[in-house]
Length: 176
Image (cartoon, rainbow, N blue to C red; front, top):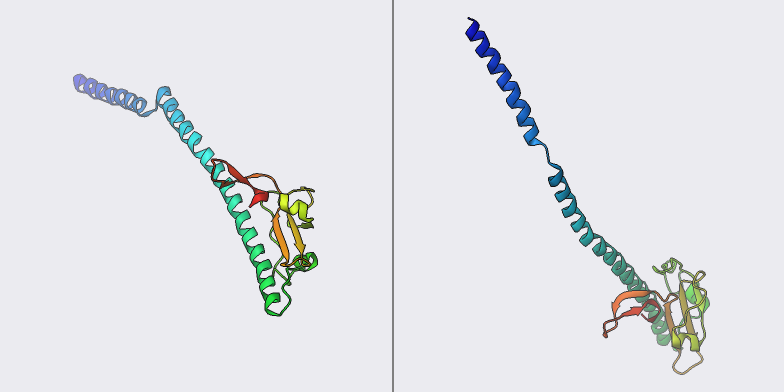
């Protein structure tokens, strides 16, 4: 009987020893953890610049969409006034009055977050000059006394966009 009890004890001890060594084999080594961290760092190094590129492209697309919508409203106003016999672009007051040219308030310039408009002269409009960058989001030039009348609406910001200029560079937001 003693031998049998010793065998049972040895068997139990053997199982305890093998379970303990089996648990240790399931853990990750420090080298494996470092390798995983290196792989994650490389992936993050690739993903983060892509994220910022998407944000910049979204801002450029938003600016193009806003300019397109406002310029379309100005062109529709001109077409309606031409049809009625007196071709004219909206005055500054008409442009900035909700419901006259645009049915809703002007959208904010995505580069400075402002939806206010300042009136500029012809020289500033031709050069696409910006001023009062912390007060106005947009610039508007209109002269209905000319034949034909002239109007120009552009962003009051000089930030670079992601819109290519054709020579390897990018167009500034006030030149769109």
